[in-house]
Length: 258
Ligand code: HXC
Image (cartoon, rainbow, N blue to C red; front, top):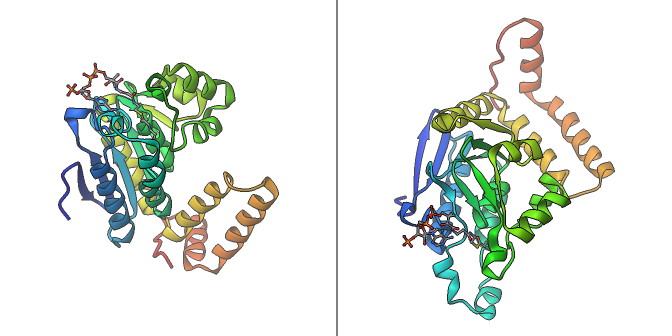
């Protein structure tokens, strides 16, 4: 399918989705979000795709929800229209891993979109923030909830109340991002990491993603039980037999997703 606000490329089993509204620093308008939801759903259903990378431009991952589009809206418009719920739900339904590769600004809805992905790799020039407070509103898709779990209450409060930005080094120190890489190398690094994930057994990859995500939704005891059940169930797969045999035979495993 052809898109106006995003670019999708598939390379070596990895779908690279680029947000592409350079004139507005990839501000998230309705069309972009609908296209993104569609592209993610397609990538999830495409058997040739084993991992997804979501990125923006060097200057901006996304500078937030589109303020021009939001400015005219009333309470009833956003409440009844459930602004932003549908695309977020689409991302959460994706079962393949999604890596956010963030360069430049990831602000407001942009930061929240990155946090909705499975993990974030940041370029050295990345800047994260929840500046909605400067617009007389607050975060609406996870900036007070996911960010707090990533970086703790103190920093999340600071960012949500002052609107200050966090640079890549602070984001890594705080646990918001998993790695920081040189800005010019962001895409090759993200694609290489996605490529590594694509080599694994997709059965185990799905299970790992589900189990880590479950830790956000339940108690430790329930989460541990869920993890153990998944761990045990992977012993019903050929990939477990192959993975362990390959280790013992000192060779690379040939996973077949079975
Ligand atoms: C619409 C935006 C935009 C946005 C930038 N632009 N951010 N348009 N919505 N969120 C547009 C600018 O209007 C400008 O267009 C062009 O992109 C370049 O931006 P500049 O401001 O000229 O660039 P610069 O001086 O480099 O400053 C970059 C910036 C700044 C610091 C990122 O653009 C900025 O503060 N943007 C807004 C960030 C923000 O508040 N985000 C939160 C949005 S609320 P023109 O046509 O004028 O040249 C949100 C709520 C989510 O995200 C909740 C979900 C429910």
